[in-house]
Image (cartoon, rainbow, N blue to C red):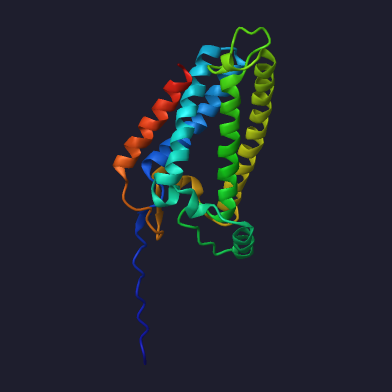
Length: 222
């Protein structure tokens, strides 16, 4: 009589796929969007301006980090063409194996959100209210009519941003409910079991990014 010996598989080790600065950017942006909406709805424009400048700094850093940051933060590591997106959709089934970073479909969401945020913050810098009492720090460089157009685009782009956020949350819910993959946990802890690591944290490049972001915020206020 033969005896079958079962050997337990060793648990997969956690690897850091999202560096801490990327996670700080993500959750800070979430909080700032709420605060920007709240301050605008309640007419607290001094704080709306401060929150907007903070968002500007975060976006400048994220764009820089998309070139000089860790592996999974770089745009070239996850921004793919239509062919890659179609191939990903064909393979998206259970058991689902999540990508080390953003998958080709999720990359579209990331790019769209960043693009709309850049456009919205950019418009806010030039925006002027109806009475001309509240205005963005760069509104002095444009006419009143152009400032009003920027303000209207600023409001419209926020509605587009809300729609993208709803789609983003719906996608996260789909991955959790259907594909049994918790994307939020990785963005909180930075880790995913069995994934390829994002690599060592480049502290010097991070500090350069902080300086660039701070300089951008200071420059628009001169």
